Length: 117
Image (cartoon, rainbow, N blue to C red):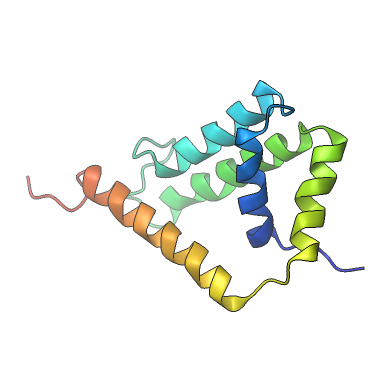
C-alpha cells in the first residue's frame, strides 16, 4: 500500500476550507496555522535564525494535523485517497515550493525585515 505524501496532502487539506460539510473548528485550526506561518509576529522572533524558525516548524504542522484530525472520517479518507490517486510529480512539488518562497519573501518585505531604519 502506498503512503500519502505530506506535501501532496496539503493542497487537499486546503480545499477542505471551502467544503460545507467540514466543521468550523477544523477550518479555524487550519487558518490559524496559515496565518501564524505568514505573520511576522511569532513566539520566538525570526531574527534569531534557526531558533526563530523552530516555533514555525512545530506550531504550523501541529495545527494542520489537528485540523486534519478534526475532519469527519469520510473527508479524511477523501483527502488521503485523492493524494494516492494522483501521481506526485517533481514539477508539482517545485510549483508548491515556489509559491511558498514567494509568500515568505512577501511577508519579509511587508514585515520590514528588508527596510533600513
